[in-house]
Image (cartoon, rainbow, N blue to C red; front, top):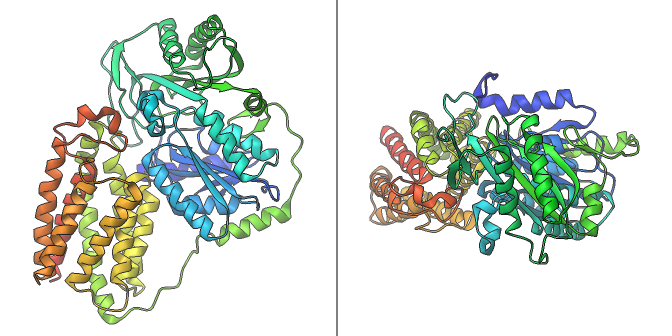
Length: 583
């Protein structure tokens, strides 16, 4: 378990602060993460990676020459927000465009996608690439749905080495695609991980058993088997990966492969070496030539006791990039020439960073009527923060049935930050729309993950609809909720029946629109819609998830409602209470 921490909510920020203090030779801090200590060479593509905290040395430890130009760092097991990614990418950009790279998780896909749109709007040519190497998370026919685990490293490195050679953005992206298509990973675990401040692990494995096909965010494995010996574990890993070769590799014999035996947090290096001796022998027996193997902790999951094996099948070009030198805090290979000091470039990068996220944006003008409406909105945020805090453990328990168990933690972070931002904006005299949009950014930033992106979208849609000029009536609120429902579906791609928050948001929005069309007062219309939401959330217990981290464990979730749907229903009822109090 994680024993040394202060406030669990501040753990990720404090860890990043300590990391940058310890590694000033390689990195410097910027809003949202870190960038190289030296400026990106003019015209070079900037490879910006990122993901949640809790996986060190991924992602901040991989920033340095020969590897990433910057890393956006989210909260524990939660993707960084679009604003954080945009900030890091702006600081790393050297004029050659930006390639955003991340593991294939819904929250990362949403936030990095939004960041790419913002960068493009700034005139920065941007591409994205999601690593999807975990063969246990989806079959070959659905490889695009696979999650990214330790295969992140060879794919990141291939793209970064290509960028160092001065290739243009489109060619760097093609290298990433080639490396991703030739990378496969598979893992096992003997115990789950425990988040800072938690008193129990996200999942448990029975005595003398192991979980097969685990995820790196504390997701349980897709099955269980008897606890193996080191040699048996090696055989399982190797044989599983050799069963699925890239399309253009007919036989492993005569092939070259980059090999990573990765420890997930609690398996000691000596244990890894015992396993690797057998991994190397088995691959040799299959005729595979191993190229520059890595044995150690490359992508971890706090204190999870587990290992994963990654094979990247090399061609001449990928081998050249895999062997290329790199110098980062946590990953070094070969030798690089001394870095040329570039104070002018570093200053320019810092200046760009300073303008990436304005510290104190000017408040839009607001009418007295809108400010009075903001009083009610602030009360609603207070009610939301309190109901989420009261149910955070329950939400985590529900989420852990088939997911990673962090939904309650993320919702607590997001709702608390949103309440704080709304309070600050309200205190400055902001109108209803601005209070909501400030809260939207804060929720997305602090919660991260899928829920952070979606709740940021919900609140921003509602804030845009309400504006700061007039007192919003019931019809306008209903229109805002309807737009929020549509925006969430556009962003996340989920529809009713996928077992997500959409299963509650859509019927809630429809019921609110129908009730306001009958000229019901807002409190009464909201009451009716909240009742619909509660019933819809309960109904998700009968659904099988078709999206998100719960999808590989679909059968386990039958009989349990979706955590995101349940939290949304709780929030709609809490907001109704605030509306009654401010009627």
